[in-house]
Length: 69
Image (cartoon, rainbow, N blue to C red; front, side, top):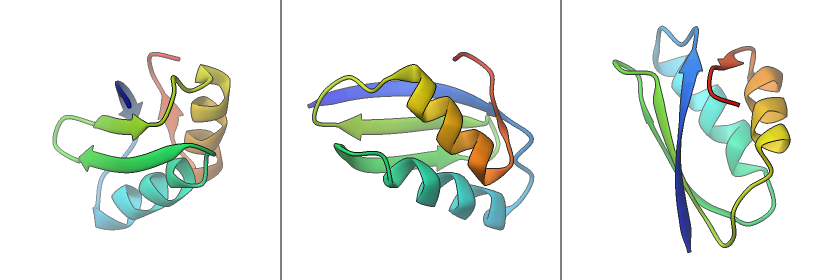
């Protein structure tokens, strides 16, 4: 199991949290996604390290920006 923390820019509400969580959860191997709206931090637990491009694409699909891609 691998845990990674990402910084997402542009989230302002519960719907934002839900959108980002849903998109990242769709990446193969993702086990859990926790989003802290106040800080913009997204903690992802996965079976193996994730491709940063896949995470960035998922966040982009949700309508937000991954800061530390």
